[in-house]
Image 1 (tube, one colour):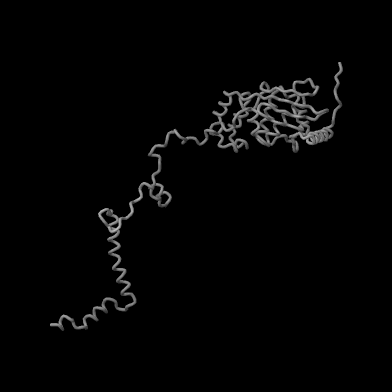
Image 2: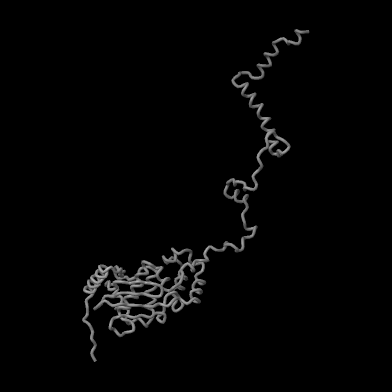
Length: 302
């Protein structure tokens, strides 16, 4: 029995062939998005590594994955597009092969369980996409069969190459290419699995939302306590501002206003007297002696 195998193509030649094929597609007006891997590591972030680790834990794929790693490192995946539920790619080998992979959506019950288990562990979309969360959340996301990443039974794929194997090296290269692409755009994983990532942190900080139970009055610090604690004077609330002072001190004047006016009247003569006597050496005593030396006008009329 004989098989029509095409001759082996060295890695350098595959790389040049892939570059020529990508240039040809661009010249034709097609948009291509090649997978570029720098160095030996295919993925470097949490999401990319978690995707690749998920592939390697299943024995269904163990035989073909090593060849796929070689292909993706050599730049053989000249185009990779990830859309909800589907991945399409062009892989350069002996020819240019078309790969299609369908990924099932996360079941609704499983996604609700993931969101419930991760509640409070993720604060924002930025933290989620950067993979900045606790080890417990990471473990829940990556849990085999019940996490966010697909299992073999949730994946189906086809390739236009003549290889009769369940997973050819071109398909394996595409799956590793997905991990490399998640390094750049981790949000594509949620799009691929058809789930909304905001559901993972929608409940964060919602304890005091409308309709929620308010704290008891005994747990609320009063304005006086705040002023004493921080050494500041708090402005009066708008509803407690004192009424404007009435003109002329009529009957409507408050006791506090009357007292302040009386205090000002008492202080005013003292200030006037001090101005009148300022600069005189002897003050009131000298005035008394001057009056004593003058004859009284009332006595002269008598």
